[in-house]
Image (cartoon, rainbow, N blue to C red):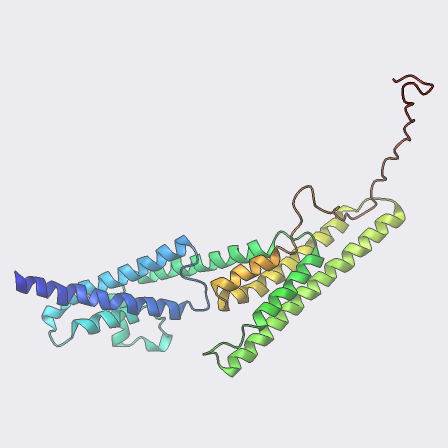
Length: 287
């Protein structure tokens, strides 16, 4: 009975225990610029499923195959199975890669779902940060804060000089796209507002469509800029951007400034002067 227990531990549990951390390291390496594995509950659950499935396949392969191949150590089976999570190139489909594909059978579906989930999480995060602005003045100012935030975090240990140069260029290019789209909105909004004031009319449907389209383009370019933070930043950076955004959001109800509108403003109703009520006993009667 002691021998059986030792066999189970050495040939089944030990390969799974070795495979789990190797699989996790390979997952982090594979999706290092795709998203955050522990960003949401769904992505965390999918990443855990990949680790458990791969570890189970390592234990199964070790328990069933090692009795017929005693020269292969169980630890090697666990490490190689976890290593199979890394993406494989087209020219690397040799015999060993074919064996890894069999050992990691079923991982392709889980990895595909995990990649889709990470993209959905990134899109939801960027959409949440890029939305809610009153106009492109505030959006442009927030984009400038995002650019400064990203540039201050380019020089990190482990990033090559070429990688830093490329990242700086990408940040500046995406920021210029945001500024260009915001300036386009500002020009259109000012043009339409001036025309409405001069002609004493409200904005036409086509004018509203152009202004809204320009605003949507500015939001989309801000989305692209925020993707760099989600890909290369950390959790504390996301919290910092949330705090920066609060500066440019509309104030709470009751303290909000009058919203700018395209077109002439309705004239304020003139208030009629109220007659002074004579005090009782001063030559008049109270109403």
